[in-house]
Length: 179
Image 1 (cartoon, rainbow, N blue to C red):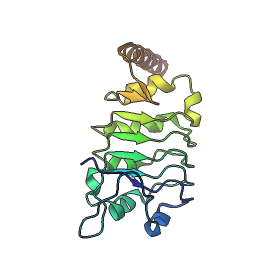
Image 2 (image 1 turned 90 degrees about the vertical axis):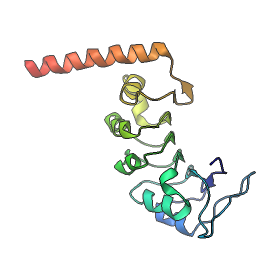
Image 3 (image 1 turned 45 degrees about the vertical axis):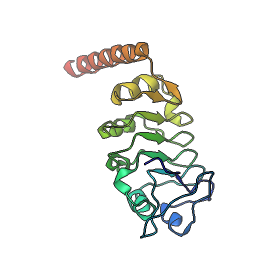
Image 4 (image 1 turned 135 degrees about the vertical axis):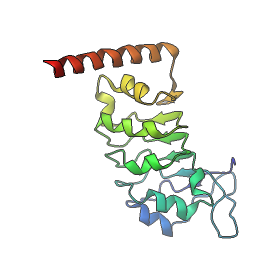
């Protein structure tokens, strides 16, 4: 299903519940609806808003999409999100997740996304976590199925370096515990 994305970008949305009264932006391809007036799409754009919390994400996806379980592409870039909420881990078919340009500051929260079996593309640049020296190595290690990160292909060499980084870090942590 390669229908047009449901586009709720640039709507000045602060809370996901605010989206429920919004009409999606019209794009080049028309949005199609089913008999229940839900959109026949597997993509949702919520970028360039003021969203801070994601706890109503499942309800929002269900509100707009005819098949919410088939959400494969989610754009939450350029909002005010500070944490990678567990609700993202419930989107089992998610393949592409844009989180760049937010305020995510705890690098270890990326680990949560490791449960998403099909996630192959993620953007996290423009968040506070990007300043961590281990940023790219950590993300590549905890999300081993990634093909693209921050709009850049992950090379074989990066995977090798990330694996070495991970093994080195694991040894350092275990030796500190032993002491």
